[in-house]
Image (cartoon, rainbow, N blue to C red; front, side, top):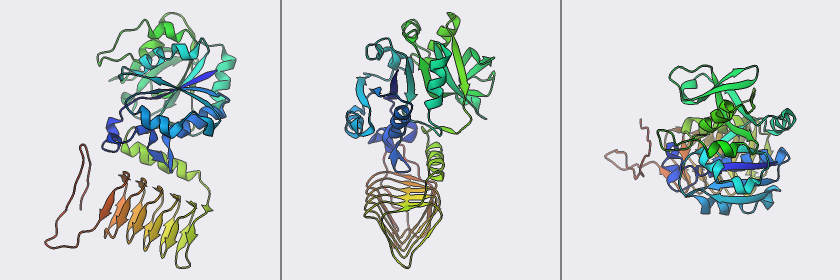
Length: 354
């Protein structure tokens, strides 16, 4: 069995972070989201992985390499334009070479992994298996109508959902899916939809089964979902102190610090993670915070946030919360008078002030 990870999206809902970085490489608990998908597939016993890439292919190739560091083999499949999930499947036919495969959206996280789901699919003999989850906001997802575990209908973002079962970003297919993706037409938004391909399989009498997951899953396409995923991952971390903590500092709860990090006269209240070469000085780091490598937090409070590499939060005078801060960002307090907010912001930025 092989695997296909889709990493070609532009990440418009996470701009401006994704103006300069692939959305699949934005870190959650200091690890790129894409790495969780690769590890989940590897842990399911699959070693041959194709990654569909788009405009950000150079960054993804540099971060992932040939897969050796993960114990897998990576093949890159270039998608010239974002023409839909079914189009990504279509261009992977040669790589699959007739084998069944699992398709994993590269910005999705699934708590319990996919190993039991892959084994279930292999035993089932079905042509396809889709993962579903109960959601309170079904209108925002592709929704499945199911009878006895068998999928009978899929609807994309319906006004009146037939159920509360949303499609999770993991699918399993045999070679018949290529008949489907080559037979459907583009949707109103000009893309080949994977829901249309699966509906084709259903209409043609192929077996499409479902599995409803009980653990959490997250599509990390929006800021609030990214922060929630960070919270969920940090909740599962254990205390591991590899950096320096001076006698005037306190560590409370589950906190992980990497080598080369220094915590001075500060309080770090977990769950939290602090990367390599970071400096935390005269500060409070609150729960559900990830501070990535070489960042500096000085004379400030940060809580329920993600701070990317090489950034600084210095003497801001109030608490930074519920935030995603990009790479090489400097946030500081301007003490000059008259008092004013002074900013340099990129396109599609979001700022809240008090």
